[in-house]
Image (tube, rainbow, N blue to C red; front, side, top):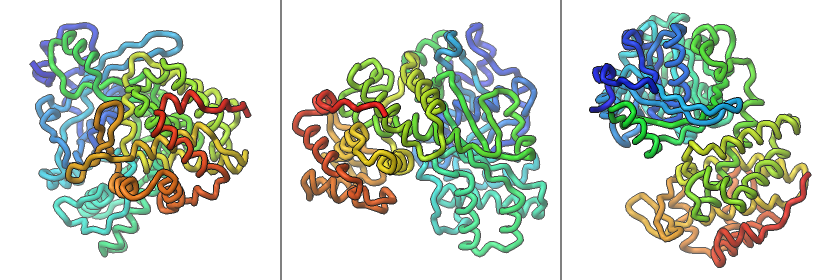
Length: 503
């Protein structure tokens, strides 16, 4: 028996929060681009919680934007899925199991594009949420009249143009648009792309004026570790509920969705009242920088080191003395003092210690390999500004950072190609290099030795927005670390590292 609206009545356990029937009759108020675990574990969780409290009273139409997989599981389960929250909060062990009912339906952009556009005619539809990965928010010069357009911005522009037509350009028909992709000023960047795309498509000036002045594009930041399904927890929960759930996800207790917005935005995003994890404020920069650098940059810099060392999950890394030391020193001694924003030492230390505790969460199995998705872009956005700031302040090589960068280069060494997929090899197994620069690195490793590769890559201003060979000693240190990793392995490289002095 699978989880569905009909089968809810067969779940007798008291260990799961089930939705009431009234939840299924709420109007559709949100259009969401993306079906991933992060969206379902954070924004959708907040909306579901608010609905249960009678606050927001609206459901979500999800647009499946990619061609990977299908929406069969969502259709079969009536959009229902179980969120299992695991961790420690204020010294108390938390184990919550919630069957979330926020999703009304899932539409395939590829096969149901007209149904997506029809949502623009719904007067109660007021909010757009997205998470199409950092790569998703890019300008692609394409016709928004395609069925469907290829890029996410073009899809969104086509939807908004349809809404403009449906409501004769009324100011009240504008939307609150909240991207959650982890890029700087995500809302304003998305707005800029849509305005450029509108001009490229020759759309009329009245629409462009409506797009710019009647819609709210909000910068936002999401922070919750939602590693996806955990087979052990999934088996336990399916036994508890007596149903199977193909969409079950697990998350930590900690949650934050910081949104830049005014009073009008706050009124529309009324679900914020249901949980103090939603913060609507005029400036989210402090939240963004602390999270982007101390959590995300640490993740992105550590993933190659840990994975190539044969460590599968973040929690396992924190149980390994050598790896735990590497991560802690990287975060607290190299990243924290070099955050490119006015952050106090106390703010950085408090946030960093909280992040380290989250990494140790015994309930979360966050796979390092999954963190390597879009490895190159993540390093560029999250880590390189810290490196530049570090040199600006200390004029010396950050050793853990150089180790991390060397591990990144080694991770990107493909040994097998299957069509457009590139595979590396480590610890006796092949692994997929899920990065848009995989072919670039494959060619480099085919033609050049270690020193040449390091020099070529560090000079790639298009990749890093800076020539990293100009950072004194960094090129040499990365090359030495990379050679040692190849000849002696990651564990030996980590154990022979220098001892950093606290700053």
